[in-house]
Image 1 (tube, one colour):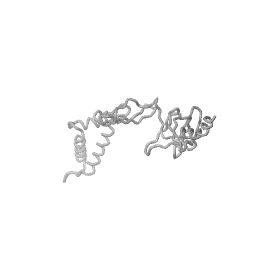
Image 2 (tube, one colour):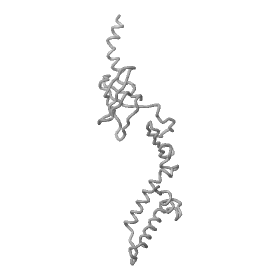
Image 3 (cartoon, rainbow, N blue to C red):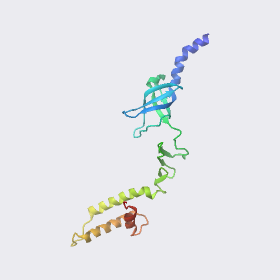
Image 4 (cartoon, one colour):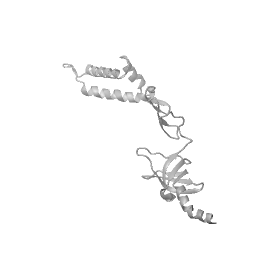
Length: 202
């Protein structure tokens, strides 16, 4: 009898300790306000709504319903709970090498910072030793365009040369030379081919 009385006496303290850290399931997410609010189910059938979810600065996500959530409740009071971490194991990118980092969504999009120092976007290397030409082409064109603006601003026609088609041809020749200098191992004709073929807009 004394044992049962003691158990009843410490039950509130026991519940408070247990409720300080809980794992639950996401039922719904309200992403319309300044702070994201989460509705969760814990302890099998207990449901709580409008739980504030703290996210790191510069990164915001809207997890899928059914994801697992880690709750922390100051004093064991679930009415004051905070959603600290949310994980969706079904969609998590698995098999990372030590030190690698990946950003992903449930829509098969991902950005991987791999052990080779490369940035891989949805399985296509953007930057690094294995960079995909299709992905870096836009970056190259921006560089080439900026080089043209630079040549255009600084170029001055030779003394005595009328500002005519010949002068413009000289300008574009200088631009082509600038482009070729940006391409490792390029030959004089590469820049023309690159601009007329690879950057052709259909």
